[in-house]
Length: 491
Image 1: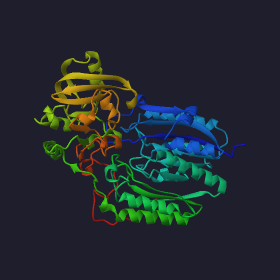
Image 2: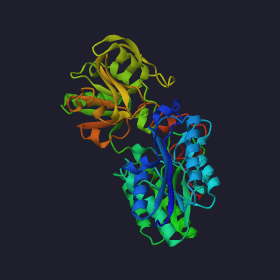
Image 3: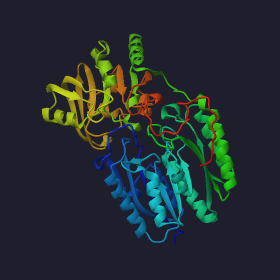
Image 4: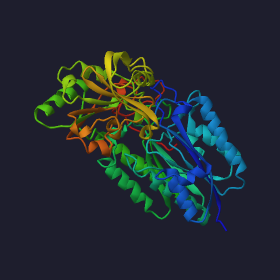
């Protein structure tokens, strides 16, 4: 006999409000029903496997995800939400609801997706306990927080602990049901914006801050302790960092620990810096040429202002223009390789013309037409890969543009994987300079670099927040504002 019945589902997306692209149904992949039992290494699979192993019946609904991008299409979100809610209505009696959410998802004409979804779930199940795992870059709001009973966030950035966080979420469900002690939660707001490129958990101050969380989680009544860093590329009215603590039926303890963790974080605010070599775009190119002169390469440069894995549009061309105007970097042998651009029309044209063809075309700035201008040039098609599974079945083209090899994709996809170059015949280890639309380097591409640097380029994921046109952000907020005393209030 099963110990209890647990509903599982969720939505995952990091939505950049400075990116004009609407994330469409073609860019969203959905795993439904029994297929959820086959997924691996995600927060949802960690929760499902743990619950089943503990003797609980899992009622699966759906998990919908997409590469970070602009806000979600309104109508498709409503379809997916309705499908999840229908599954919930048909599930019968439940002992708990165990969700896997991102925390910084937004929908066109609605805004924050999680609080919208949770409000409808709560309307159907006003008394059922709701638990959720969250991305470390979740943006907590009062309505969001008040719609759930317990939250636990990732503790690793890059996010290598998603499965483990799912396990943690499920163990919180199990402990709550078996102890019959309702969880109590507190969250303290820290008025800060912080990018992932300043908060990797392998370096300080995040190393020490994560240790503080784990120390609190060793206390007898503490179920979870998390820092939710928010998402700086969303212009939200409640954007900030939050310290969140869930306890076993002890609100006073949750309140005091959340405030304590918030003060610890705030006191370290000036310690957050770019941990790796970081330069303005022109300076990055000069430093790259110095490195080549000294025989130090491959050099890998991140085009951080237009990082699709953080929600950039993937078609801002400013850094490419700089490279094409540089007589040395645009004439390397083998050529500098740039990965990559989102431009379906250009990929379609390359497929039609075929490998080896040369013709005039316009690359980039198809979606975000305000932050840059297209590259107008005669291009040569060097390679084509149709429906590559490593990039959500996107078609890929390798184009030579005025002496630079440029990877172009038919879908909005992340550019962190060196296999995207290899599938097009580029051996990245043999190139002297590689540019990727990325922030901090993922391990696979970091391993290739003899020197890496992040260029502070412009775009929808601009690391220099003062250049972004915030309209709704609550002020004061660090680092846009300095010299103020934070209240660190509970929300």
